Length: 130
Picture (cartoon, rainbow, N blue to C red):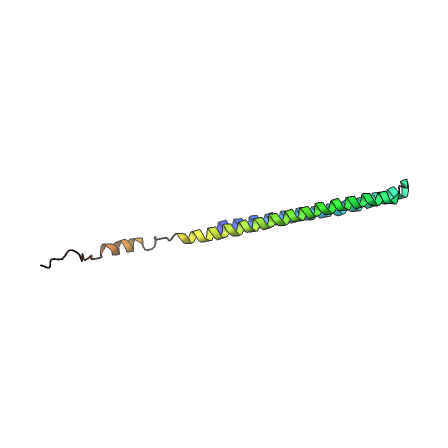
């Protein structure tokens, strides 16, 4: 049972670490996208002389999309971590509890059988009283 619990704990740690790395990658990618968009917008405004209002709208849309993606990823990661932790807790509790359902009689089986053989039974219903 200890091995099962240890394996489950290792799996949970690996899943949480992988999800944390994925979340970090997504956040960093989102920041990079926003920075690149801002740089492109500045270049477009300066070089092409596009109206600033159009550029601001484009930047706002990109930022909103990036924020939504980051929020969705964070929520998904949190939900997955919570589900994994709940499953692990349930499995650990079930594995721990089920081992207590069964008792091993290996240590005293022969002694118990021998003791039963030495018991003298008295039949109280069959007496010669008369």
